[in-house]
Length: 128
Image (cartoon, rainbow, N blue to C red; front, side):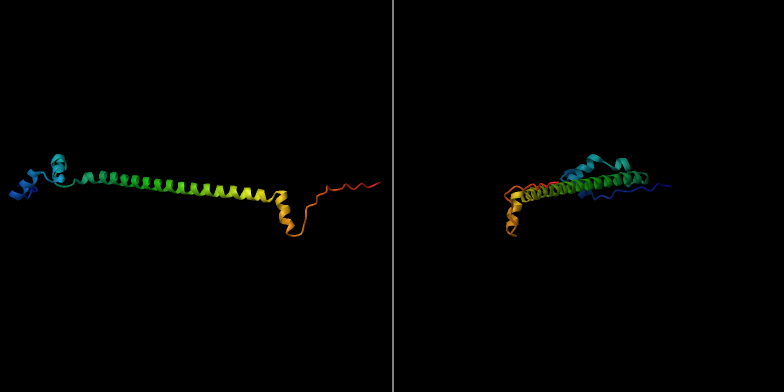
């Protein structure tokens, strides 16, 4: 009994012209790699799990890099926001310190009719 094998279907005129001309990049790569010599005409079932494992690891690696880049971008955005808020706080503190000076408070109180005393306070002495 004969063994079943795959037969490569080729048209005599077209196949020889295409291979011999080498005009396509893919035909050149196919000639140089010759994968059919390694695995035959089809994918061996025993090689599927390692390829799937490698593909899964590659996808996890790509996802991890993508997530890390997004995290770095977010950190830079938040750092810029913190620097802006820090500058605002410094400005507000300087304004508060300036407005709490005695001369500034006196200017604000004059509008209400309260004036600053120019004389020093007197000490009251009580006789025993």
